Each structure stands twice: as C-alpha cells, then as structure tokens.
Length: 355
Ligand code: ATP
Ligand code: MG
Image (cartoon, rainbow, N blue to C red; front, side):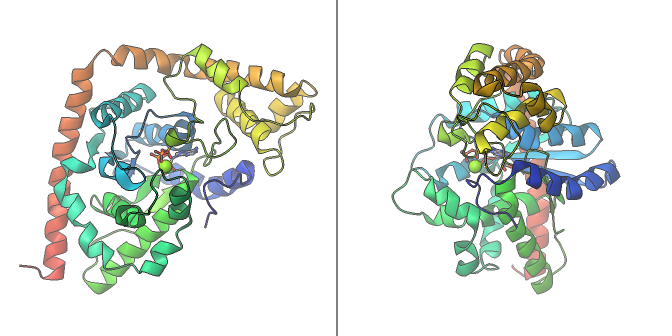
C-alpha cells in the first residue's frame, strides 16, 4: 500500500515495483478480456503527470483493443472546494486532452458523473459496506484534506473513495490505470466489491490498479504534480511556457547531476521526465549531464518535453476548433454509460431484494 501522495517517494523504486505488477497484465491483456475505467476531475487541464501516470497507458490499452471508459467526475470537484468554477469548459477541455493524446472517440466511452444518475445511486448501498474508521485512515483522503480549500471537511470529501468505488464498479471494470495516489481508493473499491458479493450476490469484479513507470510525477515545487496546486505543466502549454515553468522547478545546489529520488526528488523528477520523453533510462540522462548542474538539466528536460509533446500539442490545437466533436463525444459516452449503469443498478436491486 502506498504512502501519502505528497511524499516524494523514490519514483524509481515505485516504478520498479509497479512494473512488476503492471507489465505482465499489459502483456497478457487481450481484446474483450478487460474493461478499463479511469477518470480525471474537471478541475483544470491535464498535465504531464496525467500523461505519464495514466493517459499513455489508457491509449496503449485501447490500441490493444481493450474497452476504455473514462469518467469525468464533476460531482467530485466539490469535494475540496465550495464551487465548481468553469465546469463545462473544464469538462470539454478534458475531452480535448484525451483526444489529442490519442484516445479514440469512436471506441471510448467518455461521460460525466452528473449525466449518469444510476451510477450515483450505487453510492448508497456501497456506503453501508465501509466503516467510518476505514474512511478515516485513507492516506489519500488525508492528503486531499490537507490541500483542501475548505475550512471544514465535507461529507462528500470523506466519502470520496466510496463514490469512486461506484465509478469503477457500475461498469464492472476490472482494470484501472491510475497514479499512485489512487491505490488506497482502489483498495477500498476492492473491499466494497468483495463485501457486496459476500453479502448479496456475486455481481462485481475486484478491480486491479495498473500503475505506469511514473506513478507519481512531481510538479515544479517537488510535490505531486496536480491540477489544483499551481505546480503543473499542462499538456497544452506552449514551448515557451514549458521552458519558463521548468526554469522555476525546485532542484538543489549540487552541480553533479545524479538520479537519486529519495535524496534529490526535484533533480530526479526532471531526469525521469527527460527519460520518459526520450524513452531512456534516467541514470543515463544523469551521466550525460554530469557536472552541468541544474541549468543544463532544466534545458535538457525542456527540449525533451517540447520535442515529445510537439505532435500532441499540434493535434490539440487542431481539435480545439471542433467543439461540436467534443460535445458529441460526451453525449454518445453518456448514453452508453447510462445504459450500462441502469443494467447494473437493476442487478443490484434484484440482489438486495428491493421493490
Ligand atoms: P486535482 O488537483 O484537481 O485533484 P490531479 O492533478 O490530482 O487534480 P486527478 O483528476 O485527481 O488529477 O487525477 C486523475 C488521475 O491522474 C488519477 O489516476 C491520478 O492518480 C493521476 N495523477 C494525477 N496526478 C498525477 C501525478 N502527478 N503523477 C502520476 N499520476 C497522476
Ligand atoms: Mg487529485
């Protein structure tokens, strides 16, 4: 089980651990064997952490023929803030980011929480399956409360992981590509599925997390890169903005550049980012920079990021002019998600013996 998402845990160690479990799963996956569900809160545009943490895996799995569902949890925006600002704009821009990254709108089911009432109803029986103590010790909820913009913890924030269990289980997804911060939530989803199956009827799979080689990409402040923490480089950022943000990234004064995520999180994160963009090993990138110091490291990273994301950014700019496609993708996704959610809710009602 992971620690909190703010921890600057050794990305390499986590990545090695993740790879142990993730790679065989990817290798053995075949079309029709898995249903993937994952999502991103509409709190702002997607960033490099999303891309290397989960989005790249989603696209890869879809290209292998697996069914991909993406929830845009608009109700979850108000877990850590009073108002959901510019919600429609954020939702559309998430769809834009997905399509620019290679998600196929014809095959993926992309939808918002608020458009699927039956999904949200599952939260009621699911809430009865977990204890207050279990919710209280969830490290990701603790971390999100620490970064919350609200003075008091709302009931919605506290029960966030149960809502997420409904997101995943409504469509009986069995594979969930996520970042490291989501592991405690996934564990709770597995608990909910197991308890429901034991108590009523075996309806739900126990889904597995799929971590990438960058399950916790750090932001420019060396904390978890997040949409809401003012430390992110977005997918749609232009090359100058990327350079400016990376110039301001937290590193350390040691001129010798080494890959040491435990002791040098800022430096190692930039090395990891360069390596991911170039398909290389971060140690190799470090050796090449040698005594060049943070300035050379930042320049190298900027070039690698801009080079790698140039085609995605061009595609994004092109797609941005087709708002009708974005809205149609959501409309079709919502229709598909509603049909699935209605079927599952019927099964749940039958299992529970409701009228
Ligand atoms: P917010 O600050 O609004 O919570 P976020 O940047 O944390 O936004 P989420 O929408 O909460 O993004 O997360 C969407 C998905 O992206 C989750 O699977 C999460 O684990 C993953 N993810 C988010 N940030 C990172 C990151 N820095 N590194 C790897 N994966 C990440
Ligand atoms: Mg988050």
